[in-house]
Length: 62
Image (cartoon, rainbow, N blue to C red):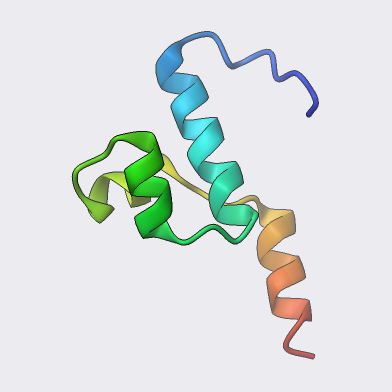
């Protein structure tokens, strides 16, 4: 994995990790349990997907 300069704190790493899990196709319940969150809302708050990932997902529909 490429080193990202903005990953300075544990909080940053948790966002990064959750986002990569989502983009890898890991279900939110598993991410919640592995990450120690108590609600799916927090998993959704910590995770995001890249624009490239969204494009690839949409292209699968074509």
